[in-house]
Length: 118
Image 1: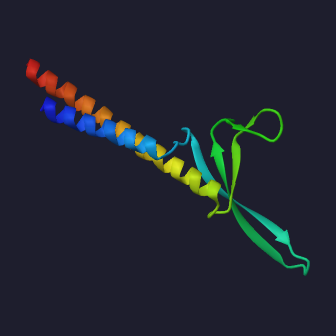
Image 2 (image 1 turned 90 degrees about the vertical axis):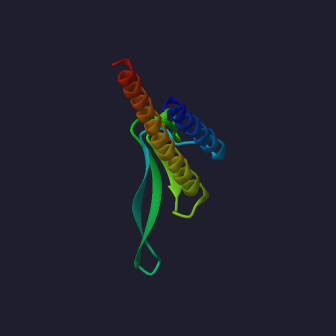
Image 3 (image 1 turned 60 degrees about the vertical axis):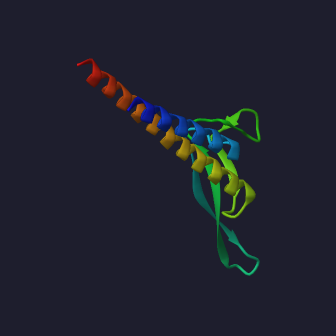
């Protein structure tokens, strides 16, 4: 069984290495949030626009003014910035799942060692 666990662990390490080659990952505690603005046209009608921002648990992004902010404007859904950060969050989530699987393998390995000791 240890060789199967070692093989699985190696496959997970390779998956993380491949994932890291595809691009950057988003920091923990960040998510994409929509927000809406309403603009009045010259004819008096109102139109609502949907935009997206990257929101963090704590200030990590460089703001317009001195200091850091918790928000980063991403623009509309199809924008390059939006697509980039969506990919970063997806990679972070996949990496997190792989790391969880690695922890489960370590637990399984510990149980196997305990069974051999008894």
